[in-house]
Picture (cartoon, rainbow, N blue to C red):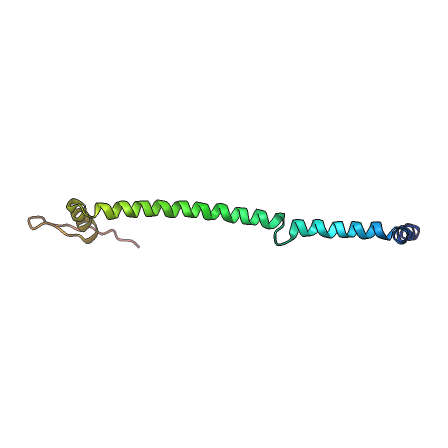
Length: 104
């Protein structure tokens, strides 16, 4: 074991430029993979981008639905339907029965 370490040290001392370039290349590879703009950061940003695009699609669908509701609010029949369902309004000649579920 001691001989092996001695041989490695002798090689390092005899080829300093080669060892320096290998170390520099190793640092460069680590920087490319794990740096701020590296491969790992790129994958993380792409995953976040996919999630944000899905969220954007959901919000666009909500906007379309709300726009449809706003346009239908001009119709008197729609206003009457909402008043009956949401606020329990009734016509003068109607009797309204409200049945509530008991939740325990």
